Image (cartoon, rainbow, N blue to C red; front, side):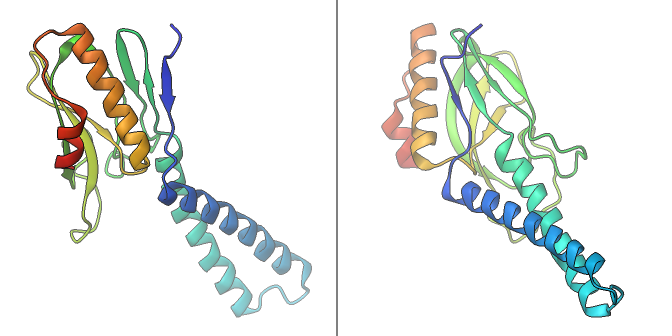
Length: 185
């Protein structure tokens, strides 16, 4: 089934993360090359700098995976939210799910320090949390969530607009409008 529209995170934050990731990858390669080319490659300063740059590259790889691989695809009868492809559950924020428009009872924008399933993740207790679009689903106790932290405001509005229009199309008693959701954000 062909997608109506697919959203990939393009916020300034996600673009900065991508740029910094590429920068640190190039810098890591340069540090490794400089250590190998120099006959005094065991100089402590070069090793420390290489390790330091590599640690930052790994950190930005973690953020890169999170900001690049999550996307939202809208189909005619349902939509798909992809996972952020992190292996360990304690770091994973977005889990994959497929949801029919007919199953949605309510849509909200919430902020939470938990992952998309409501489970705990490793993060700083002082962090503000992640922004989610949350769905109340018919006949299910757990709510479904889309992490929209790395999406631009324009993309979030477009996602909400498509969701609201599709749910109204499938359900006659759905009465949420885009302006009320954006104002609550």
